[in-house]
Length: 496
Image (tube, rainbow, N blue to C red; front, side):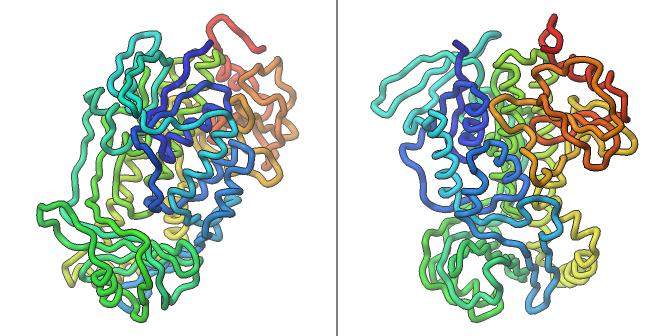
């Protein structure tokens, strides 16, 4: 029997990792040292690209998430009483043209239920004490709630255990970056008097610091506010009255807090691990990267780490591929994405926290002009929704036909078609135009047997199981496609 994959950390990233591997018929164990789940909302936004990728899991995962959340289609930026920008998501080419506001506990609940339907349940209260690895696998020591210890053998391990990752520390990997020198407060509140409909979020730029209102449901909002420079002591959440005073000074006026669901305070870390893989151990989510909450992309980036890794790991574990490049590609692909998110969210934070009066005036005038330009808005929409995520420099990229999209590009889902990578085996998908001709031989188990029509009716495209373009060639040029696929097959085997 194949040794299971040990997933450490049962938050959204670990649950996504387990769900992906389980649907690919890979045995997993999912452990977490927490004894019970938190019911505070923490991360609140699910972006379109994440929902697209979760749809591949089938069983209505994305549809259930959407049914439980609030669709936000507009982001407003206001400085004082002056509108700076109104960013609409309606033009994003996706089945999910909105930001889905859903408490993290709700996201975890949906993922957990679908995982349970596949026979996997998180083992809460189980702590990873230690591990060693060799060429064949990993030996881990797990401590159970009663104090008893278990030594178990695993084929691979994925660290989804957060910013203070035990796995990362045990590996001795550097978590390089900085901690910003300011404090932030956040909380979920019931409130009245918000001058925007429930499908619009608002960011207020103010000399004291930014204020952001995320609509979770009618009358309920996530509030995040900058609190100024750190004093050195651990940050403390403002009182209910202090949050109301912040709203009165920085907001539009007339907003009244009714009650607090929960509050907290934090400092922003901008850090990334030096490498996402150490032999048979992989790192994903906050264990690999942390950054400013501006843009709300932390949880989404982590969940997409898991989705990127899962299909590659499944191909190797199930013996469908032995190509070293497959697992080696996880680090360069996702580390580049993580670095981009850290940089972009950091820029947004720095822009929102400018203190100099003249600099704020210049920022307001410049951003009012720049963010009014359609190309800039589209670029920002793609960045926020993560639909513009690409793997331009991936070692998995084949050639790109000059008339089509470039290898590494996201291939948008097409209405009426099954998502790329759906099903219980991670397979590539072929798209071919009417003039492509027939492949000169069998394509094998790595490819879905149904060749789909190319919507532009020209060229041949091979799409990865996670919906990114692997290689594209002109009509009739099947040999590069077959050569690409042969590169991933186990040595000594051909198409089957």
